[in-house]
Amino acid sequence: MSAATAMFDLDFSIRQGAFRRDVRIVDDARVIALTGYSGAGKTSVLNAIAGLSTPDRGRIAVAGRCLFDSASGIDLPAHRRRIGYVFQDARLFPHLDVRRNLLYGLRGERKAQPRFALDAIVELLGIDSLLQRRTHRLSGGEAQRIALGRALLSQPEILLLDEPLSMLDQARREELIPYMQRVRDETALPMVYVSHVPDELRRLTEAFHILG
Image (cartoon, rainbow, N blue to C red):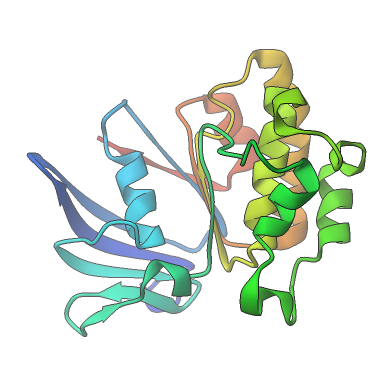
């Protein structure tokens, strides 16, 4: 496999204070996992892909689209990278109900010709009965489904998930995994999934890379 044809072509160095991480991942899988010990730099890699931090040098390309290339002077701003990002905590807006939290992702030019429409995402994630609820009335698993829906409604071309199940108990994890699998299978988006839980990696990803 050549880097030019790979789904993920990541070859960069990033520094935060005294921490430095060199990353080299070339993979044709559409859904990859990053795993490793706490502090290995998994979130730093996601942030570099998303444009939230800037590598010292190197190249980041996903599905043939170059997001960063220090040699060529390419560094797309975060809002042009079309990234859907789901964090450990749902980060919902407490002053908005579920429907308005979802619609927050569908703003501006993204409304014109959306790849992912509200009704389709509501059905995909099974959240129709939650639309009128306030966020404080959601379970942890429900809140993460809303966060995932909001990320998809931002019309991403890449989906990044930073340990989205880590704050849930086992029952809530089992509740959410089938929805994650549906998103993986039905959206056809390139995905990077961060976790240190082997069962999640086995059930949700196609290939994994160990940082450390």
